Amino acid sequence: MLKFIRKWLKYFLFAALFSLFINILALTFPVYMLAIYDRVLSSYSMPTLMTITVAAIFALVVNAMLVFLRSRLLVMAGVDIDHTLASPVFAEMLKDSCSLQKSGYSAGLRDVNILRNYLGGNAIFALFDMPWVPIYLLFVFMVHPILGMISTGGVFLVFLLGITQELLTRKRLEKANSINAGAGNFTTLCLRNSESIGSMGMLEAAQDRWSTLNDEVIALQTRASNAAGFLQAISQSFRMGMQVIIYGVGAWLTLKNQCTAGVMIAASIIMGRALAPVDQAMATWKQTLEARSAYNRLKELMKKATPKQGMGLPDPTGKLDVEGVTLAVNGTYLLRNITFALAPGEVMGLIGPSAAGKTTLSRVLLGIWPSMGGKVRLDGADVYQWDQGHLGQFIGYLPQDVELFPGTVAQNIARLGDVDSDEVIKAAKKAGLHEMILHLPNGYDTMVGGVPGSMVLSGGQRQRVALARALYGSPRLVVLDEPNSNLDEAGERALMQTIALLKQEKVTTIIVTHKPSILISVDKVMVMQYGQVARFGTRQEVFQALAGQVPQAQPIQQPQPVVQQPHSAVQAQQPHQATLKPRQTDVQNPQSANSAAQGGDQIQPANSTITTTGANLNKRILN
Ligand SMILES: Nc1ncnc2c1ncn2[C@@H]1O[C@H](COP(=O)(O)OP(=O)(O)OP(=O)(O)O)[C@@H](O)[C@H]1O
Ligand SMILES: [Mg+2]
Image 1 (cartoon, rainbow, N blue to C red):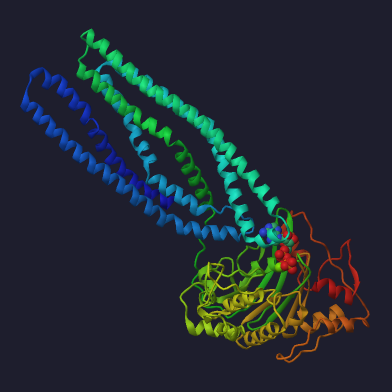
Image 2: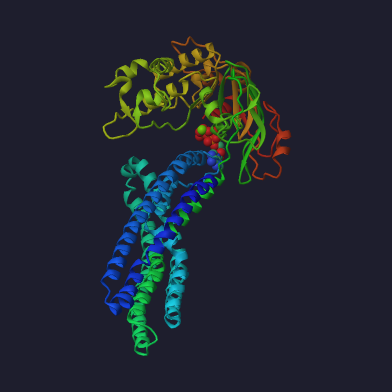
């Protein structure tokens, strides 16, 4: 924001300089009038008339050029503002949106637009002309002190009306804008969930909720506009009244031989010039307030922008060390003292019940969310400190909720960058997707992502395209959050082949899943519960501990759903005890939490001990 202000200041100073000359030239007409009345008409001198007319025309031409240049300058400032601000604002909005405590501010680019239009528009001219008000008044004083006092009083009253308008409208307009932003977010959400709304008869309720917000906005805006309209009407009539007074008093002074008719008219014109910026500022007050709010919102957003230092690290091999990772939000632990390590090429299955913290841990592992205590290290370097642009090329992430971007399948796989066909096909083949893509109407060039005329892919197809995107390039750490939630049997088989390939290529892989069938292909398993590690070890160790049964490794081509094996087998198992402590809700000292549990099986016994059979526990953890 500082960079932007510095840049804008440069334009501002130039525009102010232009304004100086424009305002001096604005005196052309009153001076011309004065000369006509007092020089030409009294002396009947034709050459004088010719001279002052030529001088006036010249001044007007220069004035037109300066006004045009000032306007061009401000338009350029607007474009520059866009270049300086829009892109960083876009990036910050994305960062904010995936941050732990997002602000929900999604109107950043609209605010940049408001600011650009304001700084390049009419409203700003009023502000430039404002410093000239006292100078014009001084001119009127020089013409005649009484006329000067009347003009000063007039300007003061118009200014007072402006302040009253500000006081009456500001809060209402700010509130209206904030509710309007909420209504906009609600509309976007409704559009994204239109199927649920349509199928479950929620349309009326959604309409009602939107109408309530909209009615509130309209009511606030109406009240603000009514107040502004009333004050503007008063101000306009008052301005005309001021002209009447100036002419009346001017005529009276002329009759008393204290001034001439030329003086009277010139004073009236100069006073008009003095009132104009105040009047214009009032008329564009709403825009000024909007621009100010937009600026404040952007400032708040950009304040959070903490550029990460690109550490210039060598390309990682995929060695992952997670050291006592702890995360809490509003006094509630989401993650507590997670400690484990994976060697390059190791595949870990991450399982646990809903809300155990699997997705949360994935986000911390990828450097999306910070760890309050402890560190996630990739090849020894803290991932959160790593420059995301650099780290990103070594990361493959398949999020739990997949959405594709508007564009071709190839562009989606190529992560929106330049499409390297070989790499795209390689990634698609790795994800077992190549054949399916070839069967799409335009193959890799098929448009997807919900743009008009684009192909609508099924949930499973979308998930697999997103898997190919995760595998694009040379990721060293791949995190797949429920990659098989939408997959059919063939899809799961392909996924297992993908995992085998990743293992071959020594890519460290973490697979979050509720479906145990995929765990056949993993080396290690971590069971999470209440944001803690309930178990961690090799697949055999964890399954033995869970159910006393190790699922048999299956050939990749014909996987058997493992879920049936532990189920049938565990019927005969000895009861197994596991003690797990529910998440605590007081975060006094995250550091002390670190020492509470040290990874694997070291969860402390708790009051709410869960005692269950292996089968029950298995069910509990996997579902
Ligand atoms: N942005 C957030 N702010 C606060 N709490 C959050 C946030 N995101 C997730 N949580 C909380 O963190 C806990 C763990 O959520 P998470 O999404 O990690 O669970 P999960 O194990 O992935 O569950 P599932 O299997 O259902 O996907 C939940 O209690 C959730 O409410
Ligand atoms: Mg999840």
